[in-house]
Structures are given as C-alpha cells and as structure tokens.
Image 1 (cartoon, rainbow, N blue to C red):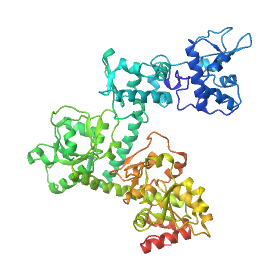
Image 2 (image 1 turned 45 degrees about the horizontal axis):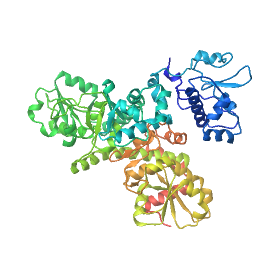
Image 3 (image 1 turned 135 degrees about the horizontal axis):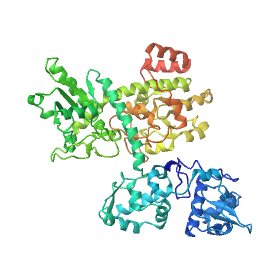
Length: 619
C-alpha cells in the first residue's frame, strides 16, 4: 500500500498534502478545519464506544459545546455534516429509519445490514493505518496540530527534568490524556514517534531501559520529521552550489575540485590537503590527513602531484591557491594547485569523514565559520557549531565574503530595474544608499512596510526613530497622511510590492503635497549598503525573512541569518517578480534603451536629476 494514499487514524484525514481530499462541505459553508475538528471528535466518540455504531442522537449528545455551537451557527443538522465526510465516518439508516454512525475501517456491528460502500472506495482500500505504519508518512502527518502539540508537550516535559532526559517508560506516564489519545489514534508507540524526529529527540536503543532526551534548549515552534529534513537539505545543497559558483566565477583562474574527486585523490595518497581555515574552525574538526596552512613546510610538498586547499565555503582556499600559484610560477615538476569547490559544506554533503585533531578520531562536529553560513550545511548527520572567538578572524570572514556579496548586489540591481520597468514604470524611486544617507540628516521620513506579517515579525528596517507603518495602516489613513509634511518611503523585499503600491497611488498623488517613493531593491539592497534591522522589540538583529527561497541568494552573504520556511512554495504574488530574474546578462546599451523607452519621462527625469546632483531628495 502506498503511504501517500493511506488515511491516518486521526479522523481518517488523507495523508496527502493538507486536507485537500476531504469531501465537499454541505450547505452552511464549513471550512475544512471545522470539518476536520468535527470529524476528530466524532471519530473519538466511536472509538470510545469500542467501534460499536452509535445513533446520531448519541453522537450529538457527546459533542463539545464548541462543536454544537458551530453546527447551530451554520443552521445545519449533524446528520448533514456526517453525510459530507464519507471517508471519515459511515452513516447508515436502519430498518427503524433511525440513523447510526460508525467508522469506515471498523467492522460493522450495528443493527441491520452493513452499509453499502461505493465501489471506488472499496477499490481504493482507504482503510485506517495499521499499527506502526504512520511512520512511513510522517512527513504528511507532522503538520497536524495534534501531532505538533504532542511533540511540544514531550519537549517541555524533557526540558523540565533535572538532566533533561528520562526513561521512555516514564515519559509515557507524564504526558496528558490528549497526547495519549493522539498516539493511540496514530497507532504509534512513543519511541516510534520520536524516532521520526531524530533531529529533535534522541532515543536510546536499550529496550525497556531506553532513555530519551531533547536536543534543543527550548521547544521548537515546529518539529520537522527526518523525512522532510532531507528535502530541507536539498534546499541547503542548492544554496551551497550557488555560493560555490560565485566563488568559482570570482577566482576563475583557479582550478576547482569536487568532493568526490578529492576523496579519490586522498585514497591515492599523492594529494596534499591544506586547511585554510582559522584556528577556531580547525580545533573542531579537519579533513583526513589535512595540514593547517600555517604549519606547512617545503617537505610537505615532496612527492605530491596535487595540492588541494579547502575552507568553509571556498573563498579563502581559492585566494590562497591564487597566491601560491603566483609564487610557484609554472616551473616543471610543481604539483597542480586547486581548491575544494563548496569547501567543508560540500565535503559534508558528500558524507566525507571528519577528524577531531587532538584525539584523531572521527567526529560529526563541523565549524561553519559564521552564523550566517549554517544554512548552507546539511541538517542531518553532523552537528554544526559556529562561534568565532578571534576578533581578527571575524573581520577577515566579512572581508572575504564581501566580494561575493558585491556580485550578488549587482544581480539584485539588475533584478530591481527589471521589476521597476515591468511593474512600476511611472512610480518614483529612491536608491537604498540615498535613503540611508537621508536617514542620517533628516527626521521627516516615514517608512511603509509592504511585506507580510510573517516577514515583519522577523525584522523591520532600522528607521532611527522615524515612524514605520504597515501597508494597511498607510492605505487606511491615506487622505489624512497626505496632509502631513513627511517623505513617505515604501519598501518590501526586492522593491516589487512597494513599487506597485507607489504606482497604484500615482493618480491620487497628483495635485497633493504628498511625497511617496519606493526603495529600489527593497530590504535586500538596504542591507547591501549597510542599513540595519530591528526585531519586534526594536532591538538590533541580523535575522531577515527573504519572502521566498528564490530571493535568499540576493542578500549579503556575511553576518546575516535567513528565517523562513524553506519548503514553503513560492507565494503566488511573488511569482511575477521571480520571473524577472534575468536568465542572461543584458548589455549596457540594451538596458539603457529599455529604460529610456519604458520608464515614464517624469520618473526617468527624477532619477537622472538625483543621480547628477549626487544629493538626497529635497522638497
């Protein structure tokens, strides 16, 4: 049986994404969440009755006040609700014309003949999960509120323990009745469930004496099963490859070697592996047989046909290779010099071996150089640590990644112009650097955050005391604010949503004193030019929400941490802007012609005048 087609014990909700397979809702317009809530409650009532059928009246009497009120508000009978969910419960009219309810996957024990199940239902064999089979489709079940609530409760119980762990048998006794019911509905034991979340819980394999512990300092908002973590790693791997490609472009004169190729060279024994990382990083782990850059001697090069340098992501190793190649020249007999493409991160995705330097024993510990680099590493199989204690090395890490960030900023600028040409050709815009300069000398600025609430909760622009409004606050008070002596500056992630806002209000601005502009390149450009961020408490932060994973690689590389659901699909309103990403670089001549013909004369004149003056906007 294919797990993706099975139904779980919790209300027999299809194990496919979401609840998209629920039958059509009857009159009264119930939401899918409401239907599922009712189904869970009805299913539990039948299970409490040992799967014996129950009259509809008996079900109605056992409904919670919330469910009873829900049915009453929608002016619909319970029988109509039950008939709308044939995958979850079976409703049958017996000989006495009364209606009884049972579960589709339970034997019919009611009076009269068994209910007739449509042929399609019989052929699909959509029965409840057998015991233990929920582990096969936990990536689909993990988003159920009951499962996440259960996991958070177990995490809180473990964290409250003196040693932050306990016997598995004791953990079962400490959970609430609701959590115990959830486990029973899933037909899983506690250990089976927790092993599906190996990145959060550790369970010993010691039978009845097994101990379980929680791997984090506080409960996570959302626990992700190991099956889903492999998909997260695919996103991380893609980001790592993009960064490695930027490094290869920057150091195009240096040969790169892949992790599988390096593994083969190490086994051949004629390869010198050089670690170009800091002492902090090397103290955690190194590649087998690697020598620190500072410990190299001329004797280390003897008999070697190839020298491979590596660092965290490849930037420092490529730079060292460039310097070494220049000093060695092209003398005959010298070993070839190359860098490990993707660095330590690529070696981790290859599942290569790491050695702890002092004990010389294998380890799963990896240093990721800076906190912002952690999202480039695999989430499974290794423990990633990142604190740097050397202030000089912290400065060098930012300096080393600055050139990569400059390449990304250039791509962002191309994208920002494309977005402006397509979606706000008549709107007026500021460059991010202009806004930062104005903020230092003016206090009549008012920012408009055009992003979603989820993005705003992570961080907002550091406005140096100037007010920041959400888009809805601004549009609701537009007439009032139009009379205020402010320069209104709208921003979003890359300038698309804020540009569309400015474009849509151009007709309303004519004849008023309102000054409204959008930031070219949005928050990404703001961070590239040195702008800051604050969290919900107005405290400085380096966390940012990129809106969609397609824009993650437009932000600066160093000292910035992305916060988003990496597996979430691209939002519908983001797709037009994602499509603006140029597939190939456009010549300067073509770009100038397009800008001159597609940007409105007023907007173009404003841009050119400010560029020529080299000063910030003046009233």
